[in-house]
Image (tube, rainbow, N blue to C red; front, side, top):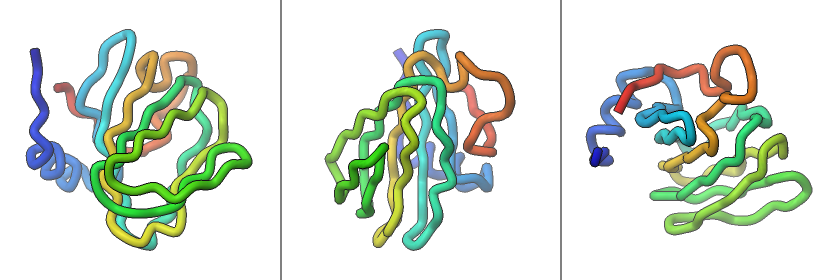
Amino acid sequence: METFPLAGLLDLRAASGGPFLEFLRTADLSAGLYVLEAGAVDGQQPHTEDEVYVILAGRARFTAGTETRDVGPGDTIFVAAEVPHRFHDITEELRIIVVFGPAEYTGATGASRWDAETVEG
């Protein structure tokens, strides 16, 4: 078993200088912490894996495909692979756990869309 205390993840993510910190990777899934400040621009691009977001804190709007919804703490969002999506109109800092299945970019080549440091859990 591994545990990942949120305070430690927040510190590691801040030290990385990027919005995303991958903290777990296996062949079948990967998980990370994504933090977006109020007013930030979410520059994500569609990916080759299914994705689940769990909103820990903050408020924003989220668009996937042609659907847009308000999101906040306690919300869980599923986005299928290849569907364009992004957070926008971020009014409070977002803290989000992100889970990919299989692991992020298993089906693609190139650098991570997050442009952030990967940390082994």
